[in-house]
Image 1 (tube, one colour):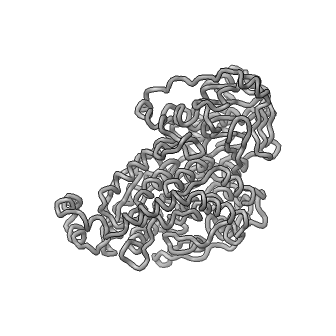
Image 2 (tube, helix red, strand yellow):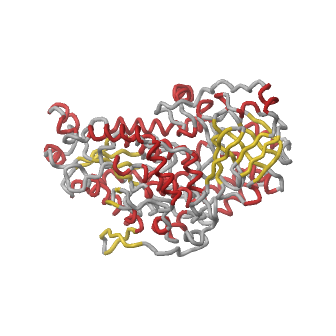
Image 3 (cartoon, rainbow, N blue to C red):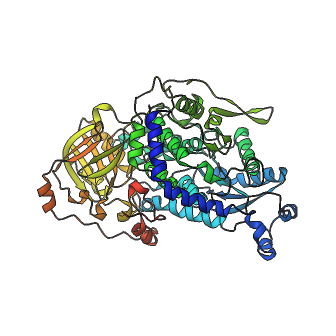
Length: 604
């Protein structure tokens, strides 16, 4: 084991000792007796399967026949979740063939940041994770199940399902993905059209035509944003069937994996010889494995929020210093768009997660001695699924990358460090994704231009006011101010200015997309401006220095001058598009470094 991985893990274990013990005690109490349905009264239990087919009713009367919960994020508007329409019937048939039953226990919402970018709905995005967690708990709270399957893929959906399922961590839980869509036009072509549109040199029709060729069918978007980072995390944490992440929807192999999920859930249910509750899978070492996987693949900065919140749901306390220390010793093994030219399909074809897992284990950067839904040991995830004469089998994946332009070994990485760093300084603590930023752009010193809204920045650009070196400060975008929306709609504009030769960067207490790109961005600045963080004191013209190498975020203003200033105030919380219903979540949200979650009591 690499000494830094070992040291960070030991620190997390010690930091989490009290909260982890409390969590495991609660899970042990919940799992100490027979499945909940055995404790239900006859009237309660009859209610739970009154509408089931007759054959299912007979099996459900059998106290030893496992009953599997299905919790799904299906909707037919979003490409990543549309394939789930078919999954419940596949799962129910597979459970029946194995002597059990499966019931659709509940649905959870699934919204798409790709649709809501720059729109009012984006202010609901982060908190939809907490709604999903609560919806998952409602689905499982009937206490009628021996195990559960979680059907989800995208940005807040998987973290929300994990948080909710962990509150029922005495149950075995298997995550069931849908897979990525097939590749469309090249990422370079898509990016070029976006840049031309931002400059006013392409029409909206041209832009829409380009985007339709990029996002063209069922499945996850193929860039390596939060959705596909989620799939990587589920493999690294051992919550998927091994190799399930990046198999296309509506293919025989995907259907075979979907059939295998309830079978495996039944095998690891309580009462058998291989009981594997979710609480045993998601522990300190699994969380470290997920962080290391994120860093090694240049994954989404959103997971500096989500992984923290997911871990906390299991009683594991991590912070950005853990990410930073692991990043300094974790080599960058993958360059997947927006960090490279190829998409996740090219990554998967090059060896994908099987190669990543092998490399990280062989380098001692990830923990092998963990429990997974496949059984003990992360080495299971060096394997890939195949069909042999219609039968699902697993074989060892490639021993090395099949395309070193997108995937490399730990001995010959794209960079010696991972893709995410911690920034500290007078403005607080922040996160920067370095994997997509060229080295010459990682240090920026320039005057601040302050905005309280992303639309104000876009308007200033249209007026021609930003053709110069500057650092955009977009504040009052934190969880308590307006729900911490992604500000990805700023990326094309800032990218155009950078391409013109200007030195530009972004500093914000908001989020950027999982597809954050080439412009340096200090994000998740904490404490946020709404809570009196120093970001509220910054004025136009103040010199800011962002140094991604040194990990610093400096405000070049005399501390006495800064202390004499009156903090700027946030606008009143906006209404409409459902935002008024989320006021309690904004008020309850913890700080970004604690996961920006409204479900845990954390002092900002």
